[in-house]
Length: 316
Ligand SMILES: Nc1ncnc2c1ncn2[C@@H]1O[C@H](COP(=O)(O)OP(=O)(O)OP(=O)(O)O)[C@@H](O)[C@H]1O
Image 1 (tube, protein in one colour):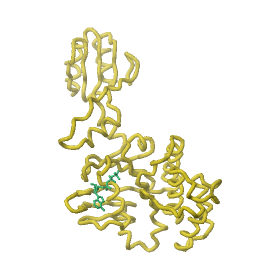
Image 2 (cartoon, helix red, strand yellow; image 1 turned 90 degrees about the horizontal axis):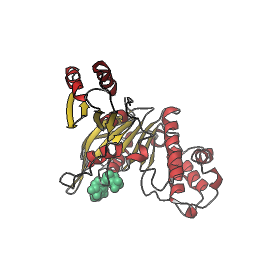
Image 3 (spheres, helix red, strand yellow; image 1 turned 90 degrees about the vertical axis):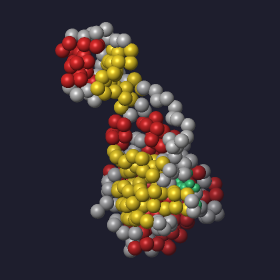
Image 4 (spheres, helix red, strand yellow; image 1 turned 60 degrees about the vertical axis):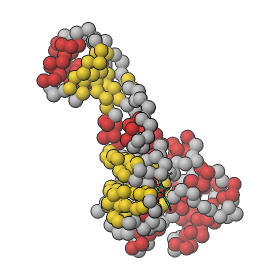
């Protein structure tokens, strides 16, 4: 049973179809990035998981059950939603102690979670003086109080400085790798999560546009192998026989699809063609993300720059 399961989830607000037939799962020990531009439907999906939004159809389940049916939700699911409100006059420690008391958790969990999120030094400070980044950490501490094995985090990197984002990456990996947690983390900025996540689900206009591993998304940005040198035309027949598709954007240059650089290099060796260039051309992940989430009928995405890697003659 997956830790988190979204099955054919749909939700409209009036005429706005916020979430439209979305399905995906998150397994224990993995971090899934739930990505999409503003208004894509991320928060509505996450709120459905937490029983805060009633779906029109479909299901949003944690440990195979609806949130309302969990016996001790705080010990199964921890959540950080946007715009978390804290009582400004209360200290960080007191804030957590109140929640511990309400949930029947030992008071010591307050200190422990503050330590986990790096707020031990300011435990006795009033929340009124906290920066947005400190509030995000406090919200994360709140989510961890019941030692849940499922974490649902809505844009947790908002307000964190680069050091804080770095810390968050490491912490989410720790939760998944060492604690076996299933982590679902939303963001509208791919770069924020791409170094952290195992899997990605991309949503735009309420509909899922891509689901898979980060590696699969990376390969979606593969724009072929570019090979240059006098006489490269002699490689064409050999590469096509190997199942590749070959274009010639200009004299002395081939763009090869469906074959790795090693195959192209081997063909050049076999044909004794001297190469001046052999590179895999990629669009970066951000460009792939922008293409996938571009609004239908909106302006076309900016041209994708081919990021050239590797020295001429090297297989990259
Ligand atoms: N309670 C609500 N009432 C009316 N419309 C809503 C409500 N909640 C969400 N919406 C609309 O549903 C759509 C999806 O919103 P949602 O907040 O789920 O997107 P999001 O991907 O989380 O965006 P953001 O990154 O801006 O938070 C938007 O058009 C939003 O205006």
